[in-house]
Amino acid sequence: MAYSDKVLDHYQNPRNVGSLDKDDPNVGTGVVGAPECGDVMKLQIKVDDSGKIVDAKFKTYGCGSAIASSSLATEWLKGTSVDAAAQIKNTQIVEELSLPPVKIHCSVLAEDAIKAAIDDWKKKQGATKAAEAKG
Amino acid sequence: MSQASALDPFAVFGLARSLDLDDKTLEQRYLRLSRECHPDLHRAKDTADCIAVLQRSAEINDAWKVLRDPWQRARALVELLSPGALDRTKRLDPAFLADALELAEEVAMANGDAVPPLRTRIAAALEADFAAVRAELQHGAVDAAARRLHASHYHRKALQDLDAKS
Image 1 (tube, each protein chain N blue to C red):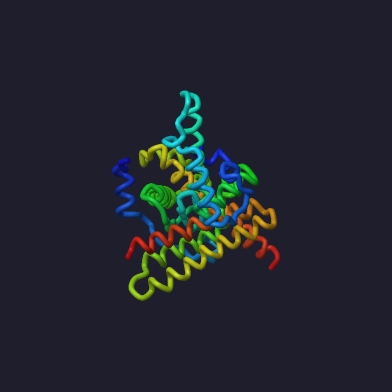
Image 2: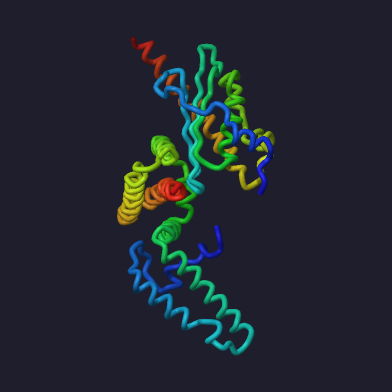
């Protein structure tokens, strides 16, 4: 199976590798895994007060397609709104990277990671607001 | 799922479903079963007979492959006790996954003197996984056992990656 040029590009030069402070209330962290292949993907977003994603980082342990999927996802996330980010579908990643059918689960993992990061951020926002209302 | 896993390997070997099988008993039974229906020794009288012998012999070999490996045996047992358990439990705890990611990084960075203790630690984690699978199955907690089997994949992969480095 040959990887597409875009997959190879992201694999060789992954964008936005790294970590954000997971304890920062403006940071949402999503960690998801595919146990069949032992892949793990951590994706983090930093959101400003207007609901815009100002930074995104990832760390992925897995095959080239999983790394490319998460690298691409962080590129798409940066500068977009949380609401728009929630609309990102794995099929868009499949299309952009020309992933073959056996690698579609990598794009699903990336979509799951985005959703998990957003959920985590929302949960933190809720907790912060509750604390403010209480305080 | 492959066809081999659809069959109950314990039934093929005439053994009770159990995680702990005695290696020697298992091997002896395999040799006996193989002898009983070896296609070369077993001169089939007609074509139907011949196909049946071949099929039986393939079943025995498939069951042997599963039963002889404790991890594959555990997976087969979990699926027999609760079909779909492995599929249902794929979503692992994020905290565990974060640890798995850290371990993968540690493996990637490890070199020289750091490798042997790391290998010992991961091997211990794998052993703990198997002990936990056994304990969960004893309590009838099949889904919990399935989850632990999934978790063990990360430890096995870490060990493979570490061995691939040296």
